[in-house]
Length: 101
Image (cartoon, rainbow, N blue to C red):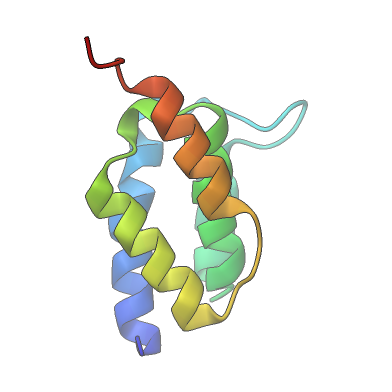
């Protein structure tokens, strides 16, 4: 089980993907980066994780790798979040990877 400080550190690592495209935003809304930072300041780690998942599934699939997937799954388990994030990321990741020839 991850403690609060470990979750914060791991979320910050994952949040680094948002720095690559700081202008990416929800449809008609705030940027992923601003939303992530707001949730982190408020210690709303579950919502911060959802922002990362939303970004990776929608705009950042090129940043998904096995390390990030494992960490995202671990964070979901530690926070007892049950949603479709993992399946959305797996789908985005499989579409972003080149097909074997």
